Amino acid sequence: MNRYLITGLITVMGCLCIGTVYSQNLLINELQASNNNVVYDDFFEFDDWVEIYNQGGLFNLAGLYLSDDLDSLDKWKFPDTNPGLTTILPGGHLLIWCDKDPEQGEDHADFSLSGDGETVYLVDSDGTSILDSVAFGQQQTDVSYGRSCDGCEDWVYFNVPTPAATNVSADLPDYLVYINELQLGNETTLFDEAGDFDAWIEIFNPNDFQVNLAGYEFSLDSEAYTIVNSQPWLTTIEPNGFLVLWLDGESDQGANHLEITCPLGGCSIGISGSDGSTIDAAEWDSSVSLNASYGRALDGSPNWIEFTTPTPRVTNSLQIIPGGPIVINEVLSWNINDIQDNAFENEDWIELHNPSASAVDIAGYFLSDRLDNPQKWMVPVGVPDSTVIAPGGFVILYADDGESQGWNHMNFKFNNAGEHAALRTPDGFTVLDSLYIPSLPFDVSWGRTFDAQLPWIDFSTTTPNASNGTMGIGFQPSESLWLPYPNPAKPGATMSFLESGMLFDATGRIVFAWSSPGTFKLPSAQGVYILHLASGRSVRVVVAD
Image (cartoon, rainbow, N blue to C red; front, side, top):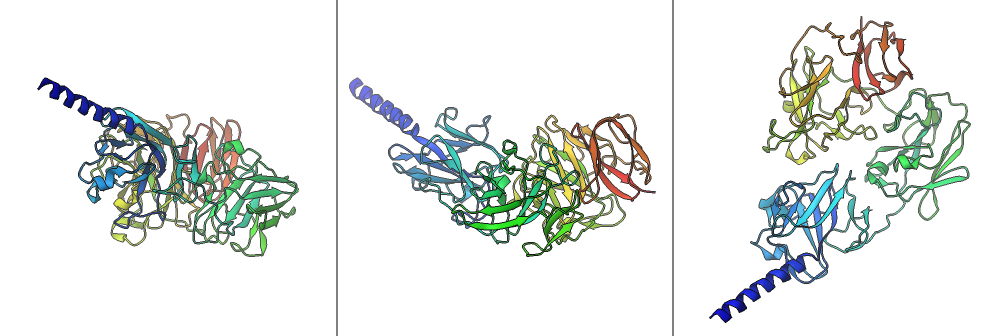
């Protein structure tokens, strides 16, 4: 009897060892954190997904775990109720939908991926042993991130994703794009991520689908540079959209910086496809004024004109829309125990406030956390019962990369280490309000001391959808040394600054910049201006009688 017991134990232990050995053959092979049109699940939904590749024999993943949280490696367990959906063939691929819809089947995890980047873990049945993991950064919609070949160590971006199939790169056709606008003498118009005012070129995509410029060759006279597919979120043009590329010879600053430059005197610029065929070409007009741009009169049209007010990243036939008096009033970039959204989740949020005496509909307004993508998220149109902010009212928008959860869920998350945020009017160009969100502890918000007024302070007790406090419009504390004073100020008044910075008007155009502390005269035109200081601080300056 003991002999049979021992034999049984050996058999069980052997099975466990085999299972462990087999699980070591499983790899995370490809993922997509922003899926709009690539592949849909059994419910016809375009959700995030992770692909598992099996280098070994037949294996049922039931009992293993998938997670995007190092502190919760057992976040989602592969169910044991349907082997047909959790078993992976030798050399096979298994697709897991990361959509927070586990009720839709055993291949649906109860978490989603962040398009702003995170880490995914495949964990053994003990809930602690990591079999494989992949850390990924910012992702581009409908472009996947995967191993260069099944099981290979190198990770690359796939313009043509390969869900549940062998990883192999496929070449796309060289789609038509236009050189739409360029500026060589840029002293005050637009600065890059490093704060440099460099020459730039705007590319227009006339197609009804996105185009990744990776692989396209840009030539300036005798120089040439081919864009690499290392950061597709910086090189992909949205359908009927615009993309600015920097002609600064500093490709180390990002994939949207070309390793070629064009002198102020001008040059010939061309775009070629992978086969060497010319896609578009343009010639700089040397008579164009400093700080003006040279572009097509209408997007993609053959006629070129000078723009005294350049229009980078927007249509050349831009119609300025002033927008209502809406301000960013409070932000929470790290929500652990603060308010929950309609899905009972603790998500980052931003509060908008209408300090005026009239209702304002924010439908069509834009919010973004990226300087290079000012129209990242648009407030949905068609839900006026939700998007109209009453006089003195507030609205909360969730930065959770969860648009499917409701109209007020944006397609990005905040970085709790600190980042930029901006609110723009429906023209996608005019800045209503912007700020730099500093790094703060969890559940501590960054808000205006008094509604719609300065300074900004941290709130250990947040006030979402409620007043931060009120004070007369003329109030402006002067205790904080970096804050501009007085604010509001009269047209033509002087204002002192203790560090270098720039002052922008409501269209995002630089009014003036200074490189050292000093006292400067404000514009004579009334309006709202945005002050950006070298330290990263941003405040709104009101010029009014």
